[in-house]
Length: 323
Image (cartoon, rainbow, N blue to C red; front, side):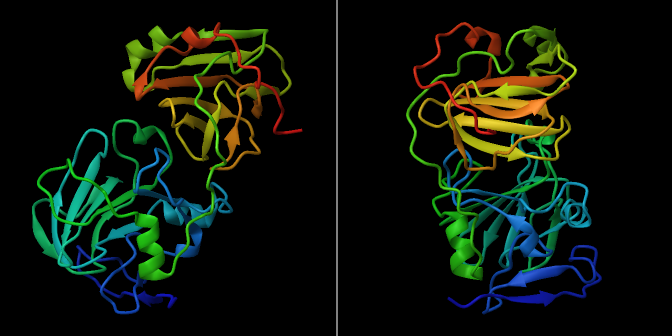
């Protein structure tokens, strides 16, 4: 497969990529990768974390938070992947978002931008800057900066359209770029149970208390009583997603697609897990000496996680991934 060439744009108009920003074009020049910059510093998986066809473009796993490459990614220009018409598409979940109606007959969706050059519907050309990467949106503002990118095979009216083209496959076919191979091993349906910390621990803030302050971040805040780092345990069998640079620090998310259950642990001191791993309930997912925030999404609805603490563990709830 032919690999796309890297081209440097030196364009000075406000609506174009800033000087020397790297834009990756397909061999024919028809398409541009949606994030300008060093693509070797970026990563995405074949399937979105919820099993869909979209991709979340993030810093590569070997790019350390706080490094120059990480900081550069956080300021990445977002560009038109093909010539066409761009419309603002801001919404609650996607935050600052855009829809590109491509001249190729496809529709492209960009979400979570920090800013955009598009205030009303207008024509753009391939590779033209249309925004800047960010983390806007109802829940995304609390996790690390990334671009949510999705493709539909045809134009639709409004936001309720089907992204029936796998974006990772399209990147491979169009640019010769591979996703991170993180296909999870098979696992069974499960519900969360138990506590992420073993006794003794303290609950510093209840679900009701955090919900009253910020319904989007409703969680319980738990603290170990030991001055030494203590294990943090998985409460759910499922797939792991690691977010390293969030407003609440290191974040580990575990999702069971079969039951629509997700648990989220924020503020861990360390983890040896990587995105795409599968963990079982009772396995150690990291360690902490500071308080952690523990969230529970029951089929997308934030729910008090303490309601699962007294549920009986499954017979397979054992193991230690760190030892």
